[in-house]
Image (tube, rainbow, N blue to C red; front, top):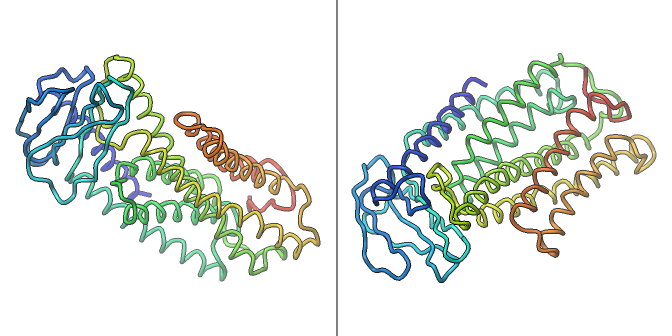
Length: 366
């Protein structure tokens, strides 16, 4: 937890640097930082095109700031247009355009190298290694897989959340290190609550849990939770970015903060949707595997036990999210709120249902 806390602080420092870089870039192109303006960061020089004008404004930016690329919406189009000069750094992310209403201007900063980001990712990897070691030693001490009660599930579930985050950093086409603050913060809270409130000593498994389905069913459930948690974090950032774009579209002042260095709300929404699709597929298997295990343990596939009902409710919420987004045109803020509600049901099932509702699935260990 201490290493996760260091990573969280490093990511938070990076967000502060992003805000400062966006403000400084706005100042460099001669626009007040409190006004919607083309802002940038990038390691050298910047150039901007506004409307149909062809004049370019150049400004020098300290090397530590990253790579400068100014983006501004063209009055006749709804997509940001980018022009820029100066060397691109290897760490610079791909184009981060801000889709806005016609005539609006949204600053977007291509954010490059950052020592705080490197420290944050390094500390996250170290924390993950320590976390994995703790999970493995708990399993060795118990002589079984380490997810038979709430403490162990929280220990393994948060490990999976971090694992999914690190894997997505490698495979995603966007630089998603900005999610580190949200991911490590969530992991810290869940680990802290589990350590203080859910810790139990190693105890033998109840007869119903002595099955190979414990490995399959619960592992898939924790994997699904990891993907849904990442989708939740992306949806929260999407709402923040969407509000910023709405202010710009209504010609209101837009403060240049770290959001100017992130992908636009449409890109964030698409990323959240893809991640949640994976989580939903895994959760569907969780529901099916749970029914098969219930038949083997209790002689029936479905018994309307509280935990079974909430597993189904979670599935319905995310199925509604996917259906509404794909067929009903529920995009933007509405889809983000559905994703947030969906992950709230996951947390409710893990905490409130396990602690306060009795049933065949009462395996909290408390």
